[in-house]
Length: 385
Image (tube, rainbow, N blue to C red; front, side, top):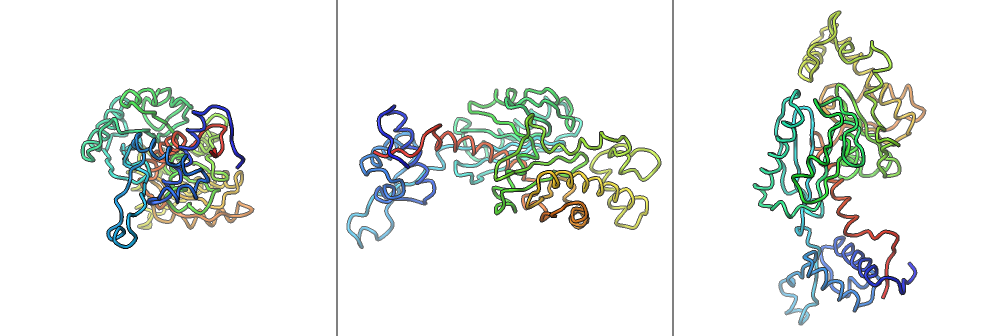
């Protein structure tokens, strides 16, 4: 990049700090000479930046390798990024459980905690269970709450930029809930709220089976499926944050509601919960004809919902996660039907992250925020002095 001159000296310092920190984070450890080569900055600039980062607790000098002094005389000083200088939380809020992942500033998970919660639990009770899980996780990990740099949250529903759930029918009392504000009272760091399927898509791209593709759809398959999509490696939320809400397609026809799709009688299935549906699928596998018909209807609806997204987005890969991913015979019907409906059928795979997908994606949301804070300076390039 071109040489930056003049301007705000504090801006130049921030740019140079971000450049050096990024280089150190990418390396296990590096000498001042190596950092100078990696960044293109002058040796005096690198020395000053590294000392400042040490004072801020983000960089530490490493001990010389054993025997290095005897072989080469006094070894060059080496430095590394202190991933343990802060921590991140990834939180999942679901119908049947809440979960939390704790990670360092490199995104390495250092602890996990989950608690069951009733599907009918009111919002206050659900949030209290989540706070309890977080408190227990931090206590077990020996991490003070003040060490947290960002908290990501994955939740069902359409989420506004300020963390308000504009519409959320999967959880009682969720529509209109100021989730970001409510959880923000428990932390002194930013709390960032994301739709659960969007978070899961980010997780699969980060640590799952979609690491080698930038165009994917993640289907959070359940009674009311949702989907998150990445286009060119970027999360696609849509204009109002409602992209991927394929579960709403059944509203186009009353006969397509899950209660009727999964019924093995002439009446809608009641109660409609995951255990009742799992029973229908189990009976279908044992040869019950009406249960088999119900399962086929459910699978056709899921396939049609996914096919609509595939036709619109043309992804390379469709990843199936969520509760329905644990049912038998999910992938093959999906592959067959997508081949029928789609001009270029995508690859189809089960999620590699399982039930950890949403919390892992929420952790990625928090990590993205911290990385932007540490490494990005708006409107700036690499400064050279």
